[in-house]
Image (tube, rainbow, N blue to C red; front, side, top):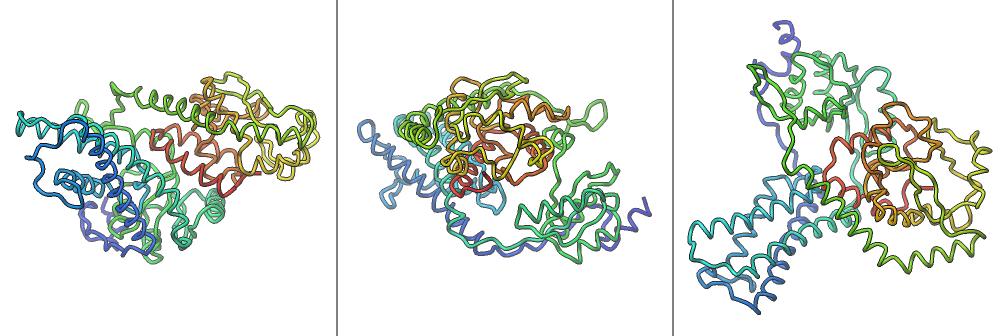
Length: 480
């Protein structure tokens, strides 16, 4: 123990690694300030619009009791300003205005608004039971606020990249196994705004030399893979926190279980309990309702476009407008996925001749595939060829978001751990598609993204993937 403390002495003289000073916060840059302002204004306008809608409908019923109207600003009563202020303060408390990914937590934003209204209902009942809140106003304002706040934040996420200049390159210090450092460095350089400014072998994570190098280089983040099982491994996290440097861990099954665990003492032993919830099926049922509702709306509103695409395919090349292919779905069950035809009618038979041009060890991907018909390139770049899969969603064979179902030819080359992705309903889009699409050349990386999605699934993650999919499709990035 004394030798370990001696090695880390340059970083802190305190014996308790938690007793570190708070790092000096870096001033917000223009992009972060603009994001904060846009989100704040959007939330205020959404809450105000919700109350405007509620007051419009409520005028046909009972008015607001005068005891709740202490003042009126900009045509809105005092109760709105109180509720709005509480809501915005709670948003800030939960990090919904921070520079992190928390700003995209749409479900948390909706839940926070709901908690504020429920608190109002309970407070009014216990403080003055005789006070009768207009139910029409209360329910309309509540539902409208949740919907408009979530929609406002979704639109802000879509619009923000077009309102700010390109983000500056940020620095990262990489710690991994020796054989993985080069691969991870190339992946980071190719797919992100980060630049690797230093690296170390994971076995040296708690050495004074590694920690001193990080302090000297001052990276924005430290990216660590395969954190070793050291008795004082958390010391590394606290040393970085003391220096104001963020730590980012590459996910593993063990870390996902740790994240979900609840700390408890069991028979005098510190444990992490991974329990169940009475409402654990509610989120998934809500996901399926969202799938069916959005698929029905998509088929209804996109029907003219579907007809035009079918006609364009018939004109471009003789043959059927639609193409169906056997794919592996939930629990390995084979089903037929529907797409608009983008290739020659005999494309499956010609595939064997192109295997020599395929560079992927699992997937079949050829950049300049000669089987694609003239309009097929456009349909693939815009992902319009995937629209018929809305019918697969309505049939219960697919979801809007989930691991992409792959052909039998590809799944036949799977390793054992790859099949874990088949434990959930496949999707039209997924975390793999929004994290690189065709730019990901190593299927193991794509499979890890699918497993990460399964381990971290939430309704909010589905919403974020849908938003990212719209952005990628609009930019025509990563498809061919």
